[in-house]
Image 1 (cartoon, helix red, strand yellow):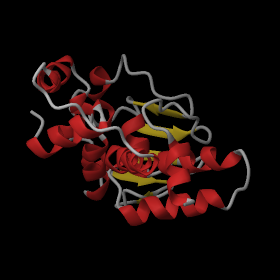
Image 2 (tube, rainbow, N blue to C red):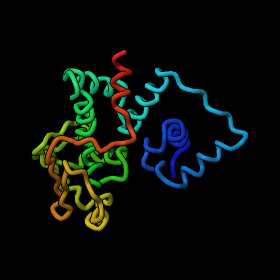
Image 3 (cartoon, rainbow, N blue to C red):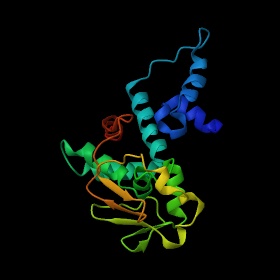
Image 4 (cartoon, rainbow, N blue to C red):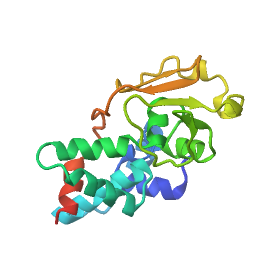
Length: 201
């Protein structure tokens, strides 16, 4: 069940912010507030629209304002058309997001906790930092002592029909994943260009 704070954030920023908001039930419940007697939302200014988009990115990836700002700064070092792609790479290359993209958790929040609790090994090193940046060629394994944890029960069955992005792979029989390439933009809910414009003001 989605909590009230998340429900309010989902209504304000859009269903894509949280996985649990991306359901018909959420759409129906949020739609009831838009009846004949509902107050029409005010038209957003350009600044307001940029601020909303920035918040979408923050809540979607579960990152702080400082982390988001740092990702923008790193991406901005690349001039020209590659800035947006670099920004996306920075967000997607977080270890908690990569675990999520491999299908090992129901949400980024869940995989962030999994990483923090030390369930994963990256290139033979136990990593407990969700923001750890992975690179092509990195091997991610479920720690030997964690394989029998409840969160990994029936893993083969749970992800057999899951289609991971082309830049990552995960073998549930080996409980091992691989970063095949740099992240490719698959997120349609977020407008990263607008976020970059916000920080360039």
